[in-house]
Image 1 (cartoon, rainbow, N blue to C red):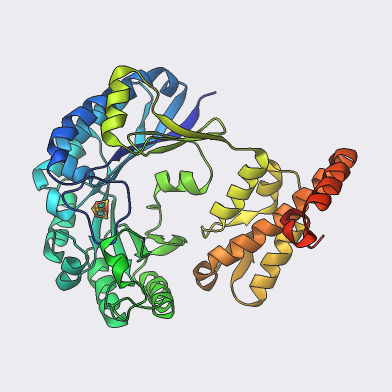
Image 2 (cartoon, helix red, strand yellow; image 1 turned 30 degrees about the horizontal axis):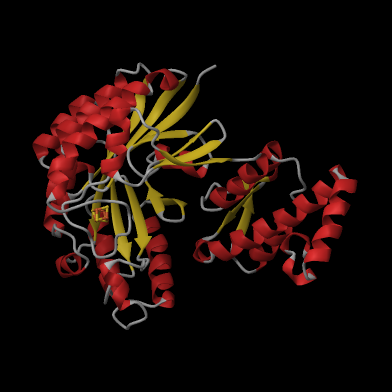
Length: 418
Ligand code: SF4
């Protein structure tokens, strides 16, 4: 029986680099010449993958970037047509495009809606025009409002907006104002991302200066967003994502549930048939190789059942739906008890909850999710060591002996605490 799969298409072009962005995207004078070449390569790559795609039903398509709207509605529609020509796109497929308010018109949105696009993700980021300039955005808030209004007029019934907090010199009041004005646009879905200062970005030079809100202030802004958005009718369903009921992103849920997705474009990642692989992060070279029939895969990794179980824990604990013993043991037949012990400890401190047999983190737990997930994964590693010893006592003992001989005890993380 055919399985469902998501498709991601990466458009690595932007009108200008934002001051905080470390995604793979290109801008500048060379982009105009590269776009047609890249586009041809994407069309060919999709056509060449038709046979593989025919083994699946495509139930979500996501055009991300970069800035897909800067690439142009016409090109996006051609890519979606190429996908439809594979004969695998389901009629009720969720089809999302990321758009920026400065590069999308009402006419573009009408064309996209008619071609079958049914979800938009609008990069709004802030309602404060001074802030938008500070972080290098090319639009103001009234353009963002116009983009959302135009999306509705074009017939989009599923509109998401992206917001950011912890921005340079942002106050709690400024963030509250952004949330209120963003919710007034009545989007169906809101993503809220905290600023992360990545090396190499323009804003990185301000790291550890008073210009950037500290961790405590950012945490405060996050908790405020959870509370305010709930008041406005948005239910949190993942660390950074909030939606009206029924408007959760089906495509992104695939990532968090460890489901399959296949990608096209430079730097894009896929997860198909237990293999994770990514294409080279060079749009020009990606286009050249596709057109000359050379391989474009940069790295491939086979995901073992144990790794699948780790990912289940890691990704599941990012969502409000959380994790369950039954689902975990269906992937990996190992005791859930030590994992549950860690979560019980977290529950005592208000960081985790158990409802109907499922464990999930609370908003306070999400704030320290990296630490909690690290602890949970460590207890899984210890269980794995016990299971491995039970299954292969002789080999395992030999291995332990050799390892102990080679290393000091405190350098053997696998066997700590057993
Ligand atoms: S528009 Fe998006 S991808 Fe492009 S530079 Fe800005 S944040 Fe990065």
